[in-house]
Length: 118
Image (cartoon, rainbow, N blue to C red; front, side):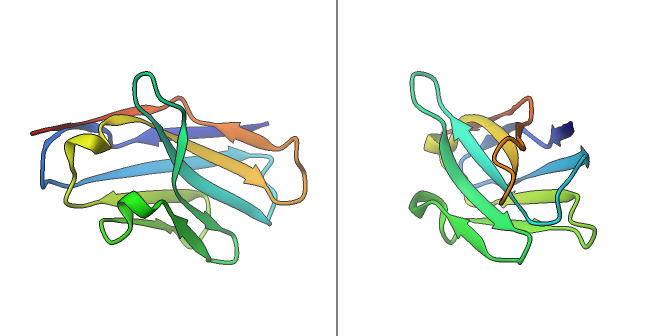
């Protein structure tokens, strides 16, 4: 089992910043990808950013240049620094951990609400 605990959501005005954190524990595989997804009401859950255990990262076009994903040295916590937030960034943000080779090892956090007011 793998457990993910998220924190850092909240309410912010447009142009402001927030940092989300996600700490993973349990039966973690060394080769993995951790990412942040978001889901707005009535919409599908989409990838925001991800970082793999080799350090490579990937971003949705809508957040490039504004959001930065990073991890700690122990590779058990992943952060999403969100700058210049826009009302369209409003969503529930979910942390995801998945093993690169063990397909059944794919876990989600409980979600944290990010609301950006105009």
